Image (cartoon, rainbow over all chains, first blue to last red):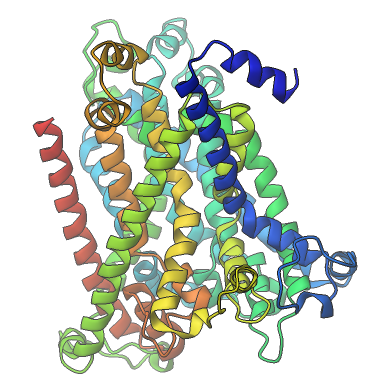
Length: 292
Length: 308
């Protein structure tokens, strides 16, 4: 069905006032969306330019002489993009994996059992999320220096896991809470162990919650700039945020097409994952589950 | 927390067993939390009472009592006062913008009249999908004077293109635009989730009673989404208050440190000043402020709930 026929069937039976209103809303939405995606359109357009042609004073969304020069630079074998990409992937994936591995049993226990000290632990988990990351970082800085993990990706991973753990436990607990207890009780009564009940019965049902938790821990590691900027000194350890930041801070002149190409390349994987996971978002975001 | 004890439930067998199993599940998390959360917090607060800097970190730093706190109030007093004023202004304005934009978008996108909703949703939520640091740097490019696209657009309409990041209030505006763009999708998603839980019959009944659309929003929608809205506002107030990347990546809290927030001040003290003791003391104070805000925020939202 084309847009137009859809439009006609939708509005055929409506009064004139509703019709004007309906069209108005659609037009408004499209205008707003154009404004929203403007930065994204701009960066894609900038990435298709040569260094000289970007510096115009008038707006040209479609580049006059599009070129893949910047992508050639970014994807060349000796480009800094690859090491930064690998570092970012290693850090973000390890953070996510480690975090899920550690957080899921805790979240399960919090959701299913009544035990001594559960309430205080839950409160501490909220409290920790309000603590400025920078405050803890001074201790991390000291710890990493003494553990000789400074300027080291593994050290950074440990810091990231600890920063996303409280949110992950909370979010997964809230999601487990929405799954009825009867399902794992049935498995337990049939003689399954608690671990089995959790991993084989509950976890498969909790995929939306797990996906959202995983996505958010991946995202926070992938995006983190401030701490990485202090911990990582050598360029070979740079993650994507540091690499991009370094590109924009050249004193003489920033090569914006290069920066734009790197931005587009580093955003594409996340945008794709996000669009896939989007339908889980409303179901999996803890705040929806905290309805009380 | 509010499990109804069912005698047959295997989760409630006997107290001892239940506790052992629960803690067995919790061990990995507890170890991580103690070593990498509790310990660093306590340790950092402790560092706030020493004169630790980069140069004496390998030994030689001393306990100096509340010297750092005194310094913060005396030597750095006027700086701190200014930074606090800017942070509060930033938080209030930006959270307001996020809520307003998020609410407006949620109401618009909840409408049945929108065609091709999936496509609309995918586009409007795109800022959330973009990696934050990339987006901020993109905005940094857009706010450049010469080739920045904001000024290009302004010139197209015959307006002068100012030097955004070199003027106190224009830079502040730039922060607000950037952060609202980054943060409204969260607000919108939460509100949309709540909106979809409202039964359409309520609106139908109101229509029969002759209510205008604004009245429906005012008397049906807002009261019913109040709880998730307040909770999301509280969370976003905290992240906005603690926002470092936007001011830092756009122009390091400039020009001339005029737009520094508490986090930028703390970050600068760590990164360029390297006064770790002083920074710890300062961030300790920030933590207290955050907790006070959080506490009152919870109180207010609870009062609001009881009132409704």
